[in-house]
Amino acid sequence: MNAEEITARVKQLKAEKGAIILAHYYTRPEVQDVADLLGDSLGLSRAAGETDARVIVFCGVHFMAETASIISPEKKVLIPALNAGCSLAESIAGEDVERWREKNPDGIVVCYVNATAEVKAHADYCCTSSNAVKVVNSLPAGRKILFVPDKNLGAYINKVTGRDMELWNGDCCVHERIPASLLLQRLEEFPDAEALVHPESNGSHDDRVLAHPRVFISSTAGMIARAGESAAGRFIVATELETIHQLKKKYPDKQFVPAHPTTRCGQMKKITLERVLAALEEEKYEVKVPDNLREKAWTPIRRMLEIK
Ligand code: 13P
Ligand code: SF4
Image (cartoon, rainbow, N blue to C red; front, side):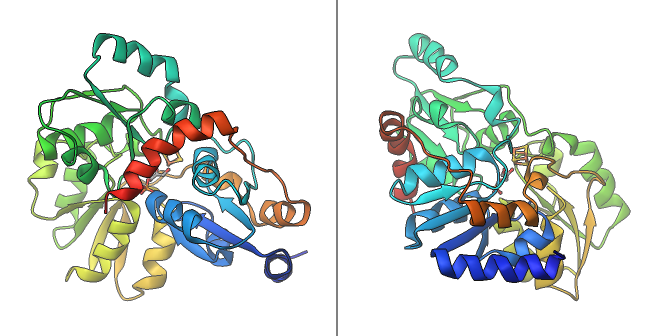
């Protein structure tokens, strides 16, 4: 079957099975194009909670499908590639959180959504890159905060909120390749451009970057919205490069320059059109979080979703 035939069959099966396809902006362009809804982590989490579809085909990495299953336990959540992982989610276990709690009994644990259900079950609050500042600002003053697992997003939030935070030493192996020196060099190379920077980037919390008048730091969805709102005609894109597929589609008259030439997430690319079709045909691979774990992991996610 060619790509057109696969797409047509996917659409047919979707209707027959009452399925919805949710896809992250980092998936392959042909997967994005077949999705019912595209989003960043927060947008997709909300969509998983709001849909009345029987089946959710989650085109993203494993922790995202797990989050969808925690939010919508009555739905059948499928991931087209069971081994689509994430360097952040793999950097920490629940017992690491508990060790910190023993030393900081009054501390609050904020967990970036890029973590396993097992780690979320040990956290007080979840957050995504869209709402992390809001979540941390909502916490009672004077309490120490452990932020897991992303040291870069954590350092960025720490700078913006000024809160007393300890950071877990995890990173996104994709955004870690974007240091401040590269961002500053690109801004000099393109004096007319604005830089759209994901806070997972290594350079997002550098003082020179934070103070730069042509830098906009945000989650993936925020970056895409900013490209429409800004008067600039050219943007340096400091995130996963598939984001440029949507940026070009939405704003064909603007120009988008990668900050780094190879910031692609190999885990997201495991979701191919062929695998999306197989997922729908065979209703595989189901991601289901056991009830006892789900209940514990739901509390920090629910608290996050309640913060508007
Ligand atoms: P957002 O979807 O919150 O922008 O996070 C980016 C990311 O790396 C997801 O894996
Ligand atoms: Fe994980 Fe980074 Fe890939 Fe997102 S881009 S799934 S944080 S490795």
